[in-house]
Length: 613
Image 1 (spheres, rainbow, N blue to C red):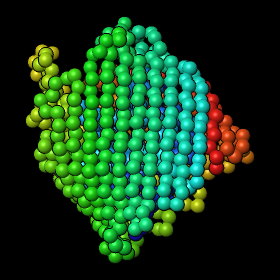
Image 2 (cartoon, one colour; image 1 turned 180 degrees about the vertical axis):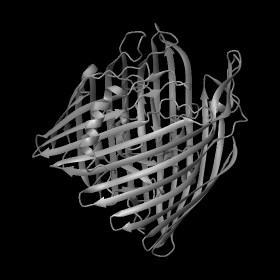
Image 3 (cartoon, rainbow, N blue to C red; image 1 turned 60 degrees about the vertical axis):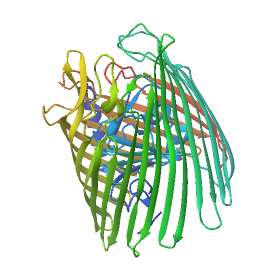
Image 4 (cartoon, rainbow, N blue to C red; image 1 turned 90 degrees about the horizontal axis):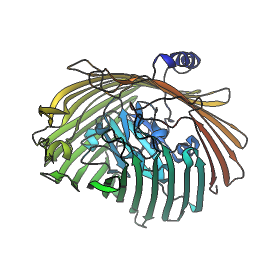
């Protein structure tokens, strides 16, 4: 063991695309099986060694994609869709294997981030220019991370220094008067490494909400990230990381069509990690961090509300080799969530203590992983979660994996403790949403590429809904159950000189009580990326499509399915300078990722990037 979418209008295009790809896309793996990931088992392993469904996007992937934000980068990757309420800086939602945004855990450099009042993460305020890599683990990970990892984990890593000294910068201009500049310096010298990155984005935007105040809803973002690392002579490694992003957003609201709504936001993550090895078979990691999610909202220039979440985390992890083929991981996690703001909460702070352990073993062609975790929360008591996974190499090129895992989603401060002067209050008697997930996966590695097929089922009990208990008075209750059946297929290969990465996700996400589809979930999503290099020039395209989704629990309102085509090109003017250009939504499709919210239409962007090799 090594430690290291479619409605009727898109069906013809989908059918032709499927015919073209079927001979080589009976399945997908957009990431090489040799790629290192850290998130799946809280330690460095190759994807081939990991008995979990993992996608890794590196800094090179981010630059080649020319994505403007995390939404554009991740949307349509295997098992994942993202939605946006009207352009850059607007509220962004995520669906991972059909689960809700609140049922996906998000980490920055190992530390939880997000709003403890809403239970979601402001992806729109985290700029890609500050990100080194993103790891997406699909399927429950509560046995290692505790609450909220029902659908999976998204782990964001900030920029790090590399050997030598590097100064980099880029300038971009595009549709909606969008302007972006970035500047960075990084390097490493022996035992010391460092990185400092600055960025500024400003856009006039476009009208966010249909049939509303027909103005442009702009956005501005200022961000920086920094890291310092030092390796001491005794083998102890210390890393310090910080990310801070400030946003100013204009948005629309259905409650007051003629009003001007603005929000000032802050996303911040600060962490320190110490790693050392007491002996040859024992590695220890200590992690200390704090994240903040803050927003101040105004209407027509007058203050209306303020929310601030602080999440502090302390982790102690041990990785112990038990022979050449076995590894035991165990440790303790402590988190403290605190909220403050203009709304009243009967409780504004809670602690969670957890003990976790995981055993991994390889024997012959077989691999097994067993994981257990015990969480003790001041808010909702004790919860035990677990996972078991078994993998077998049927041939040198084919592996089968079967797994079962449990998880839970913790009630938010709004769910538990919110106090509305008009009577709609939180419910301190709520219990967490609980999940059980089964998965059967096949992974192949051939001379022509990698592929995978994943079949899964997730049952979620005790879903929390706000219920009308009196006229115009609401309270959250554990009343619903859901079942999500799914199939993921994917492939990466090379066809006539073009690199092709394709994936298809099929979902059947239903409320078990009503048999209606869960809201804002597309049953079919498809993404195909093709790229090729001609000397100093790189060309690429992305086709992204999804089927319709229902916008209410009775399934009477919906957002239509759609398909979009994006084109991109890059030309290396020299070894240090690169000119990039992109056309998004080439055919100017009018579509919605969330019903009634506009998208940007056909968009053009051009940028110049400087980075010595």
